[in-house]
Amino acid sequence: MNIGVVCYPTYGGSGVVATELGKALGQKGHKIHFISYDQPARLDFFNENLFYHEVSVSKYPLFRYPPYEIALASKIVDIVQFANLDLLHVHYAIPHAAAAIMARNILLKRGIYIPVVTTLHGTDITLVGKDPTYEPVVTYSINESDAVTTVSESLKRETKEHFPIENDITVIPNFIDFERFSKTPKEHFKLAIAPNGEHIVIHTSNFRKVKRVEDVLKVFHLIRKEVPAKLLLVGDGPERFNMETLCRKLDLFDSVTFLGKQDAVEEILSVGDLFLMTSETESFGLAALEAMACEVPVISTNTGGLPELNINGVSGFTSDLGDVKDMAKNALSILQGNLKLFKLQAYNHARKFDIETIMPAYENLYFKTIETAAKRKRT
Ligand code: GMT
Image (cartoon, protein in one colour):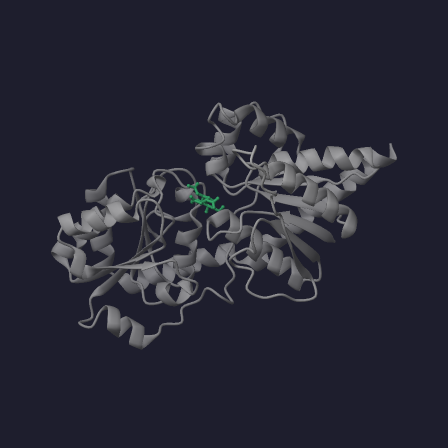
């Protein structure tokens, strides 16, 4: 198949999922055309099946807000024709689904029907999408898509609850590439971080408010009162400065390292004992899955899709939002109890999300969607 993939190029979960899926499909022989405003961060190699098409938005003094959607739709129209695409897979509804539907309508006038698969990732529904500023267009684009997927049952429920959706929604959970994410501990790194054998606790995120990184620090503060521990914070974002201030206030600075954005996350996770995800909501929680694949148990909230991923008492523990005392209690029960068992259980649970198991679900959906579109054309 020739597939166009529209995604954000950043380190955020939706861009990572889009890129990793595209790379895996490319390895299976499909031709994958990424369309974005920058080269996707995880698109770290090219082969004969992978292509990247940059969307550039021309500047004009009149444009207070450069019209990205129009540039994107025009680029999609061009690539569908130029690369003879069979299907478009757009990740994150805003504005990708709307641009894809616009492109599909333009192409229809030229006698081409390009089916659109939209994958909803979370904040495009739970935070931004619900906002009345965007809601009518999000609803329209979801209903107009030829197929819609969500990354968890919880996100499917929320989508149906908050939007008048007429389409079926298929749940296809996120996945992990075990060739990349597997425990590869670098002893010298571990020793540099925890020279006295302290436990290593990790959090990775984009430091947005929804991640509640302040709760990560509060939980770690309680953990460190009981056991020697170090905290590695991976990623960067708007809350970083506030978190550095809070670290000083809690007198944690010596035990916390802000690593910023990192490419080789798997190497960092490989030295971890525990992963903290205290988010207000997470449609899936890909960062937690990456940790589990590297044998790191997870302490998380029980919101959104997290309980589908982090099985309470198995791959780690889940607590109510903001209940930092319960999270710290659970964390200590792992660190002071059978850590080895939890590491193994976290890894075993992660195996259920192997890319090799999940990828065929997308492939089947593509085939079905293309077939349905072809039937429509014939009738
Ligand atoms: O978490 C973010 O803020 C980034 C966002 C994205 O779209 O990049 O992540 C969402 O999609 C990921 C991939 O499907 C999920 O693993 C995250 O749980 C989801 N984030 C939220 O729902 C807050």
